[in-house]
Length: 292
Image 1 (cartoon, rainbow, N blue to C red):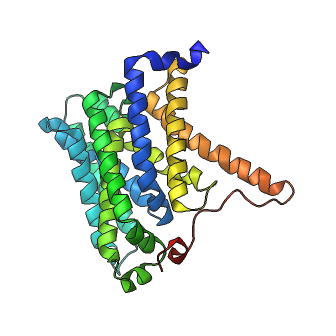
Image 2 (cartoon, rainbow, N blue to C red):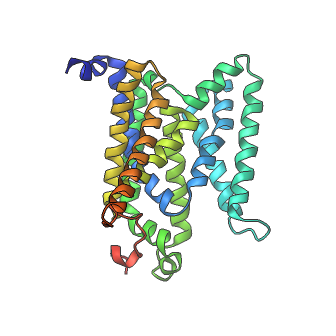
């Protein structure tokens, strides 16, 4: 029994645990919208596109999270500006901005004296290095994301499932889209500070995708995503302690593993006796959630 709790008697592991749970809360509130709206590729691009801002902030001695947020916002703004282009599709604009910003980031970092060390830190982060100011920042971010999500739930829901009806109801889908992108920006910047730019995407998507396999209504999906993300944090930290693996990467890998375990269980249940699947991805029309 002692071996189960031993890692969590160490102060830096406890801080990592608290930080991971706070991150799971932020990602649960945003990741559901990202998946439901088909914005997964944008989330991935944003996680990589933060590198230029992080690199510039590091060289100038600034706050890395602020640099990440500025870079992520620039990515989101660029995608939003090009989303109605007739010359190419939305995925093309995301891909071009993604490659361009990642390239700029690598070029900037390559001019620093510790290229390999800095780039590794940017990409993978160090969840075990979280300090109390970082936890305060995470708590503030979760509070802001939660408040905006609650206040904008109806516009977000209508935008996700029926933008035309949202316009008819006066819910201003364009504004809702901008607010949603801002929430994604904040969440990715905060996630970067915990697990790095590459692994932030895994924590944003994997718990929410896993939750969508077992519950239907969006509030329940958000709650389930938080529980799964928190469980991935606990299990990942425990495994990394005894296996001597990178904590952030282990947390993200655990979250992804939970998704595939639930997916496999759902398919097995469906195959055995033709039972009803656990729950499909939430695709209910807004009116079923009280929009009409």
